[in-house]
Length: 242
Image (tube, rainbow, N blue to C red):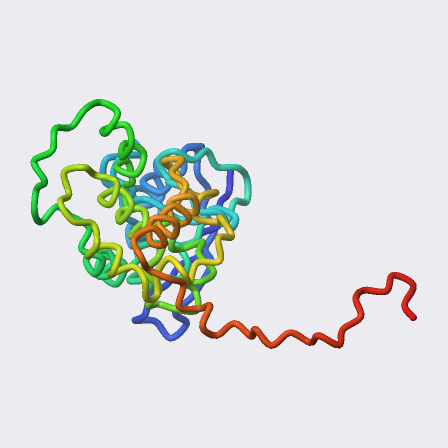
């Protein structure tokens, strides 16, 4: 079968190209390894665990974010690097800015509350703890595509994981860190939830963070720009158009 790979090399005059390769493996990661071993040793991609745990092999297949190690390919599939993130070479992206956004939220336990933890408490943060930071959610996010200061899906999911953690003594600092360019900038379109390979729902996590923020005394700063001057002379909708 043939697959097409969108490639990038900043050292060439024509930096972008699409190359076709004949492969026998139907697993995408195995097909990429086959190409590198037998067809083109310069093909550059990233992989680690090869079992869907590390998240390093995330790419786009026909426009959708996938983990290469978990993806079965078909004839003429187009393989591309993730979107919205700088490309280093071919399918390898530079995740330093997304790592910075994660650090910016400071989602970790600085002071332990020393509260007793039970199984129910563990289950409350279990799903969010499964995030593998594959960056698929950032690639699909329309807000992140136009605003690189937006804290973004997995950093906000990580924020909820620690806000909901009983071992954290004071959640106010994390909540304060996600008010600007954070939870209120999300349009709740849900594309991040659709592409997450771990079945995490960042959209729901962000909604929950909004509710928690309200309860803790924060407000939506975007409401300050909302026009409250309604036209009281409006007579209502006329379905007959007269």
